[in-house]
Image (cartoon, rainbow, N blue to C red; front, side, top):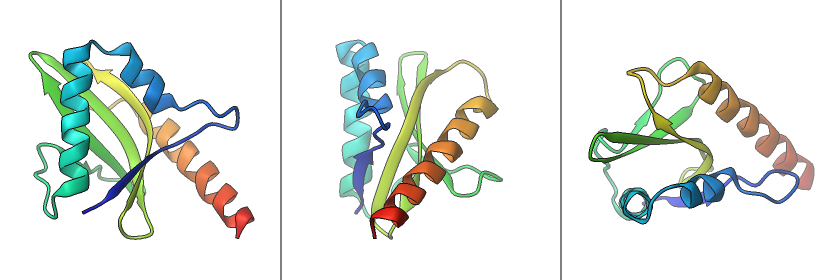
Length: 118
């Protein structure tokens, strides 16, 4: 069981909320259904949740509606917490490096901010 938190930018905006708002209601419902699975299940199928190799701890949450594939990237923190940093519609087999870089950058910012608040 995990708790999902959406990363917030210094402006207060949430890239994940913006991404979900850009989806159709059917697409958003499927993504939210997958997020609930991640929160409620102890063991989650790699069909929905996996660690990306060679990314320094970036995780990927996966949802599919018809032929459309959606990905949310983020990282695990303090055991049961998942911070989601960015989402996108996947067009190729590989996760774009720019999306992984963005997740890593936001992870660094989040951890630095949290460290400063301790």
